[in-house]
Length: 149
Image 1 (cartoon, rainbow, N blue to C red):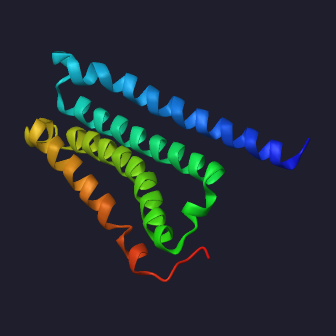
Image 2 (image 1 turned 90 degrees about the vertical axis):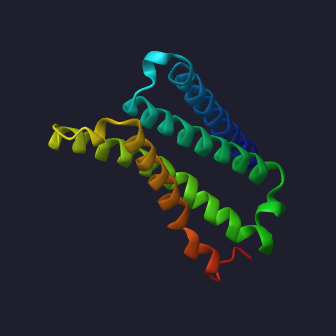
């Protein structure tokens, strides 16, 4: 098989896979948004995971499409650092969102008599902290001399 044909097929599989993941995350999030019975803290944390998976899948869908059809745009000196920052941020946001869910469940189990950990306000604080933390941690990449060229 021709190497270029193989590379194109693998890239198309990646693009389709990222698209399916993004669509599945949206479909899973729809009932969490619109059904009143799902408006509970644990479901808000699950919705946050869906949002981060959607953003990650969409980023990689765009990245693979650009890498295949417009590779020169990704390797310019102006775009290298911002793309590296975004790549790190979107990948780790999914990880941080899952950690927030796990930490929240642990706190609810360990401190079962504390009502704070069962409130929407606490879920909002956890989600906000996760997004701030996830945006700040990869910032040193922007100050580096990292370059593809």
